[in-house]
Length: 445
Image (cartoon, rainbow, N blue to C red; front, top):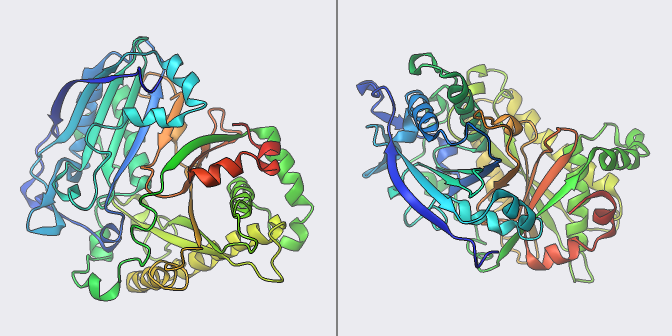
């Protein structure tokens, strides 16, 4: 299908805010967290079945225009002479219309074996965005592709130095409400723009942070994606395994913790080495609502994520066969960082981020060791992804990420009783993972 499927661009326009941005908001300052975000675009594609409403492109465009009046920085551009600023002159969001020569059912059937087909629906021109061109690329690009059956693929790509996944999903959810209910521009108000005040951009960052020593090390490694579904009954059976050790754990693991522990153990076991490799699993920790003295950041626009590095290192006392040890390592590592942030000042939080980065990504012991297996586990289960209904119903397929890193994307099934995991992995790891008996026992793929 990959060879026969063609996505043809029909039009490309700029959608501007329905109300002009006031002059006093001409410049949006980026924060420290924006500054240390990956220099890349973050794509997301949602696929919707045909319904009588999803041919109304004008409502989608009009609602986007209205919501941009509130999230005005997305309609701006990076300032040419200062990358710490967004110039907010209502330049607009790129909006692309396209069509594809297949039905959505055809795509859904083939993505069961080849999830990479979803990459064809990324917004045109965003796949190759990197540090050489990101700062001259529109901050937000939207592409709506129509299938022969009338179904739609809605793709959004956001410049990561402007905002994180939490902000993206919040905006997407609010956009659906504006589209469905016709909320006027002057009544849209769901985000604060205060992070640069609390966590100011650091123009001397290069003196504080060295580039990661493994930068570019895995760029030539092709990543493939596959979807694993942990349904309600499988999670119950997995829960039984953990219930037998819950007393010694001292806590009841969450669904995300259990599934991540199971998958991580299988990935570590996938090594060919006679000695188990060390591994780092990064957990993005959203600080919104977690810093007690700054409740105003709960609805902040931008990046506000700490990457918690969870380090596994095999020794005589750590048995990889023990899910007990891995889930406890995950829980305790995240808890330590979370507890440090609760009562911390903004300066203390910035120092914590810098220390974590130096220790785990720019340090020779972990960041510079080619034998260390690096993964990220990104849980989206608390975000209202299944509620992104523009009046077309719920999405029937979702696709995340840019294939730049090995990532586990966890999100709720449509009925919200199970967990779907989209895994972006090197082929050698994926080939072994699908043969692992634990994965065969608990996941459908």
